[in-house]
Image (tube, rainbow, N blue to C red; front, side, top):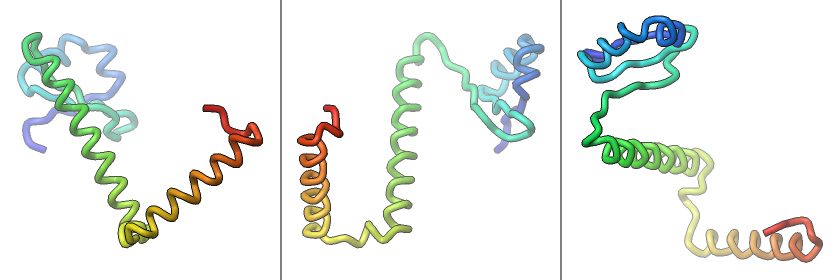
Amino acid sequence: MSNMSFVSFRELRTSTSKINDLLTNDGKIVVTSNGKPKAIMIQVSENDFEETITTLNQLKLAKAINNIRAAAQNSGASEMTLDEINAEISASRKERKVLTIKGAVND
């Protein structure tokens, strides 16, 4: 993690000028709470703000997909056949239909 500054939430509140300088010079800051990373601040410009948000959303989605894949791998679900997957879907739909009829599920 070269060229990355770490600041606490307390510093963020009390040293805004210093934080602004660090962000301008380094381009990114890790914000910590009790010494543990909690957030990342990155420098953006008016010209690339929308693109930056889109990129961050794509990264968040990719991370979620990787977590889902890892969970499937750990649980063995990644080894299911298409027939087994379809059977699970069918059973879930039947259960939902029964619950909906009983008024337990609100759509």
